[in-house]
Length: 141
Image (tube, rainbow, N blue to C red):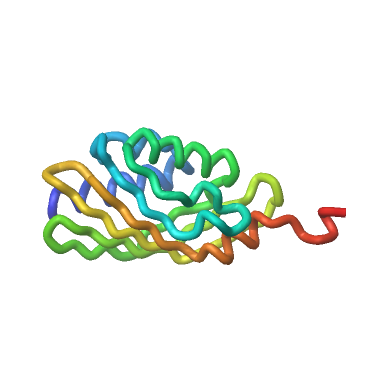
């Protein structure tokens, strides 16, 4: 197993075990790290916009955890080829405003240069996350 793969697996384990301590990611990410996400335009997904530095990504994680409480983050499969690693898993979060829990498939394609992650594209079910962030009609009255 490559060193990058070992470190990525360990970081995901720490992310799950701490229920979202964003600092577990800091040692893995290059200063000039880019994050591409899915759908920032749906309700409840303003956090899912692209980021272009390690500090922006750490701020993104803080924003997510201000709005969502991690229930679990469970990587299931890793595929590594050269400087790229794909992670496929399942995660669940509770929206702090609505109390709704969403569980969704999640995947991430990571790219490394030397011993640092330089890019990641994440994919999750944005419709399910948006639904959990949207108050029910009777709650709005």
